[in-house]
Image 1 (cartoon, one colour):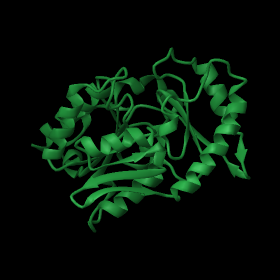
Image 2: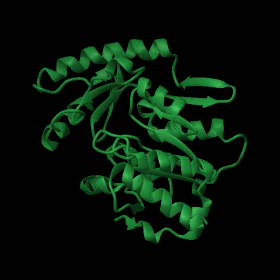
Image 3: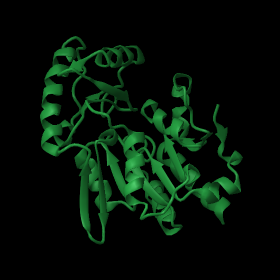
Length: 268
């Protein structure tokens, strides 16, 4: 099981050059962005730690984060693309051409709407129009959360689907079930992002940390040796084969701020 933050060593803290982070209920809490989160992101930037948001959030939300927040970049829709603002401009890099992703997305929407007819009251996310690649099903955003039994049943049903002979992928966050076709994932695209943006520096896995809150963060917990869960991950721990190594005492963005302060204290 995860250890408290106090178990993080000076040596581990000093190794961290990049902090990859989930967004919903990791940087936010109860549908809002706490001021403590933005303060923490600013502190990390000033300390020279590069923060990359790695999220299932839609392209429209990622565009705003990449342009306005103090982050190095954003990997969106569970790895379908990344966005980065720098002195040379604003870049969106997608793993497939956007027109190809959009066509596949429309076919996937048709397939899922047929399945959702068997689950009354469950609909696509309100931000679906602002997505490039995946299809998001709303299980907890601005609504009464769908019960665990129903979300598990729906997730399992989706994972049995195929689209034009390709396996349909799906993962669950705290607010959505995200569905897509393709080989990308949070972990796969994070590795590609670092390969493209580390400016030729050789990175050890010890130089990269991750913080998250949900089932769709498991591949990141499995990949990296230094990982964190905000406290609201507690109900999901039994379902995770790969768990975070450390856990905060606070939830959501407050837990992210707690990690930031502890990390910077150790490094000083």
